[in-house]
Length: 446
Image 1 (cartoon, rainbow, N blue to C red):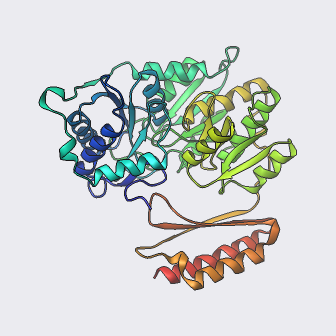
Image 2: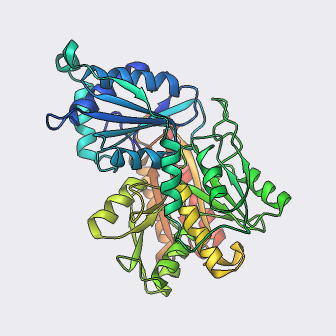
Image 3: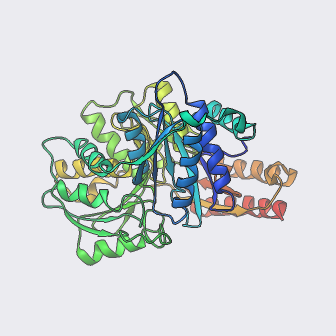
């Protein structure tokens, strides 16, 4: 078990878990780990729109400069922009200050290596060892301290990058698009990108105040987008999360389209264009069995990984896939990006819509999802999943589901919650099975 890092960087309550002291040490430790060679080292730091971003950014700057790294401050930008700019600006490390879809009270620190990819477990453990070590012995001398400056051109650079992922012969002329930026990191770049590509853009969730990120808007609260799509009779709605690394779509009828359906859309399109590097897609254990069956009908496989987009990406890199993602809307297209990119994924879907000349409801409804029920059990301490009563309940639930269903129980990597998910053809049975396991876990966690 790692002490600080979860499935997506370090995350927790701002000024509670994510304190200035911790951010300072993360900057120092990561700076030491990524000082390789005798060149002048540099780090790029982006953030979303949370109030606590100022505090954490300042502490990280102090940490990195104290070990001799120069800091380039990007301001509020999407997570995938940080990953892209880490590579294009030849930085030694990239940092995104964000807790993604969490409420404003939380914040986090995501780290990227010089190649733009999230760090692997081994490097995260090395950083953790330094955080708890004697960092004061590794500080730079007075003449070797780093400098910090703010970069002004990052929005334009990311917008141009995103626009280039759309095929040259495709524009968004004639499409009325509602985009919900969750009052988060993409509140400027997403509407502008869509407008420059020709769309008639209605933007919501673009008035961040430090407190309203993800509040009743964005991919975790799509009802606002659904209402706006219906109100404006739009062709499509695009919902990003707080740091814009994931996306959900709303069709012209107001129906929400999740990441599984979006992966199916892109996989089918790329298969037709002979763009898939492997005959399949990488997803997590949480993706619907309906996706697996649909891809099988196309002659494509579905490789499953642990939950977390970085595990999807690690499998993609190791086995040569160029398409993967999560049901939650992290869509990774390694031809374009080193991490999930909600805007770029939306543009790929829009290109399919434009080429097909069909409504989004037809393009994006590839399969009928199997009944899937997910419930969370919050706990304070201990390991409820190791209790004999819970083990027995899980075994009994799997027997009841049989070969035609799936049961997934896992601790969250970002909060003290155990997630219980089951799916199968019989909704009543799936519901009973989940309730049975939830009841056992709840009693064990009491």
